[in-house]
Length: 353
Image (cartoon, rainbow, N blue to C red; front, side, top):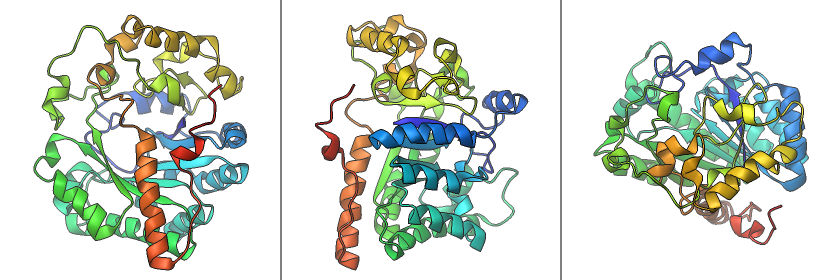
């Protein structure tokens, strides 16, 4: 999976987001370097590479990807080249205005593979607290909530209309603010709305990249005691490749400040295949496989790895399996059609270079 930081500005002011003003200086860094948007040329170059292998391109970053003025065309280009697209979004740019709904319809027509709506709640009050618009609510919490829920429902309807193999999932961060309401939220999205899967993500502090305190986690045990060594290899250097708007590469997604970028060539200069199979990544992989990952920077200070959040057993392939099974079931039962989608089993025998 190639994880792309599509954009750094955002129209939301989520308190747990590592990029929100007050939590870090990361947005300021990119603003000062005119690096707030992912360059179309670099996107196309990476899409050309990914398309050769039907690899995943994950659209995420420090802001809302659909604020990128060329995001729809970029997705259409990548799908035409054979890449698979996973979109992380707050969903606000998908409606209800016709011009926004048209964007949603276009990417579904392009057969985007998965849209992940970051919702973090199952009720209006909690949603308004955790997912407020930047600058504060102009409408009531219920109006704000119903608008965003409506955009998720629209995605489900549009994929039926176009018989598209698009998974629609919702994610919820396991944070203190949703304590006692998590189960209700999961049931709301699965049963009332009918999404394909609900991802419950563990709360992250992002270490010294941010000022977010560990105490806001719902799972208090995660950061209670940190071991001094870790034998099990971290999964991220083996499955994810992170690129920012400046073409910089980081060792992993925990390094959201891209401090390790000085260790790698820039994606504007070298193919991502060369970097991924290069000496530096392979050195980190060997160190982890030999049980020496804790000797490496920044792994030795990674709370997510030591707390077991970066886990070989609970990854994105499980999300694809569960959501894919549900999508096929819904399309078959509701519309009587079979949709062809990617499943992890389909690539199980493909050798990794």
